[in-house]
Length: 181
Image 1 (spheres, helix red, strand yellow):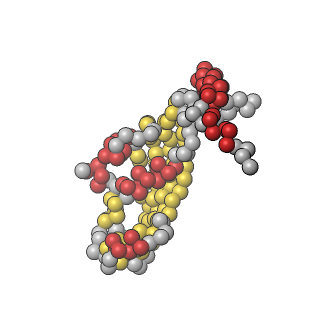
Image 2 (tube, one colour; image 1 turned 45 degrees about the vertical axis):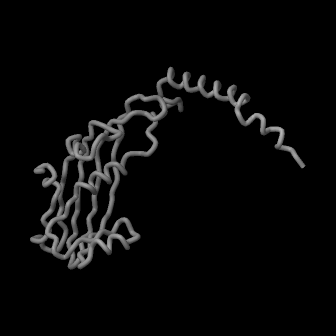
Image 3 (tube, helix red, strand yellow; image 1 turned 30 degrees about the horizontal axis):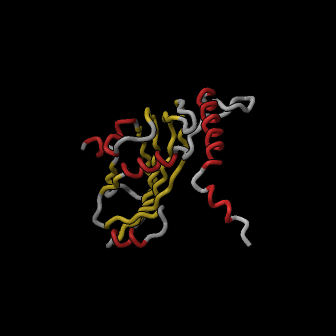
């Protein structure tokens, strides 16, 4: 419980203007969220909170690294995280209704009676969004893939095997109906 409180901001006492917060995120942060597709997270989050009358502008700058596996060959990958995300938090009387109606994912509503901002879920989401969807080993200076050559050869053999099998499919009998006029 105390670990989660680390990612709360009591904004009620803050004066209007920009306030900067820095957070360090590692694998312990992700434990409540379950198993992740990456490990050894070492991320730094810099949050700039600009408090105005009736709303706040939040800017999250994500920087750091994670380790994942290549989607193609299974080699370990060291991925660089770098991204920025902006959220506008507005204080209203009926935040649940307003959040359901809001089309812009960068606008979030809280109750006028709220005193804290809970950042954990946003940080979790933004780190995950900073990781590329397709995680593949890069190429060397000569343009050759850095993927495991043994795995690439096995994939090539499997692909050739499926091409041979395509000739004897259950759909083969339907070929006779292709050119009917």
